[in-house]
Length: 207
Image (cartoon, rainbow, N blue to C red; front, side):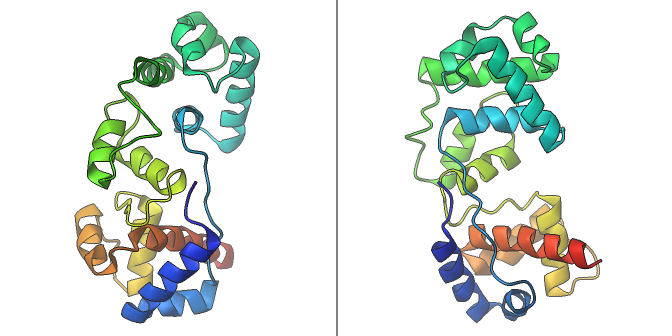
């Protein structure tokens, strides 16, 4: 599971002591709610299904896939499914290949989602071997499902926008610049990302 409310508060209070902009942001927006996902295959399968579609569309596809195949928590079921079955549930040809790739990696033992390397970069490297799982998806998984405190999804557009706003930058910092900015925020960069999403939503609600 991801970082708890208590862990987020502790980490953000530590960040607020070294970064005045975060302290001011907490005063404006308050502390974020935890973002918790279950560790394991099902969460990554949901990630693949949810790529580039709305939350409602992803839920609909999941329901159809469940009706077509049965228990989606068992990777062997997806690994054994035909293209026709996966497409009938609404998966594109590309996403069907991604779902099967994930299922095969897990069933073969090549990817053990309950024993990923402790080093974040090594864990990301294992996850991105799966077709359809890029660095961003791997980082989100490690942050939300494993609660790794220092994962920093610097390629996320909302994080870039909101960190730029918080720090008063005229332009949105790119991924490289954002990684440099956040070096001072170790080992709490995961909490910083969750706070950036929270602050971004508050900004959007106000605008």
